[in-house]
Image (cartoon, rainbow, N blue to C red; front, side, top):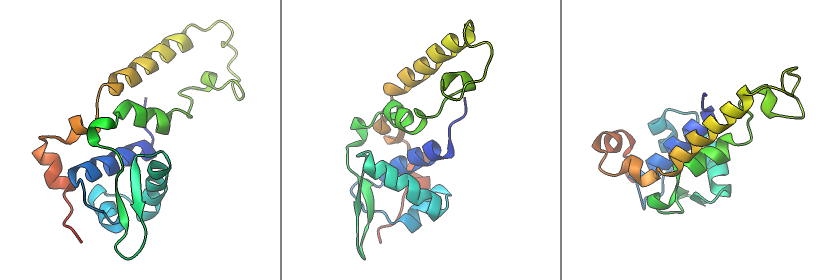
Length: 146
């Protein structure tokens, strides 16, 4: 399994917001810190806001910050929301599946169970687990207040 760039960026944004908790972060500073283009980051930030993870502030001193406490954000939930609509293999999408083995293939069931185990493992990990007492991450993601 390979994570999409959107999921990867979503986690970078959430971790940066958690490290800089309480601070309103500007998209420009965040893009530089997490090594992403502002345009790509804008799409991810918008989605994180719509999903209730971030609060965005408009205006001259605007930016974004966490809406939820880091301990209330499950990594599994974030991954499901960002990765969930994407079929892992052709046979997982009944509308576009052309695999001739689908009617009797046992591999897809095993893959489905493995994928669910992957998400279930991440359900027990919170954003707080990733950032608390992680000095290395804090050094990388700390952003000076504007």
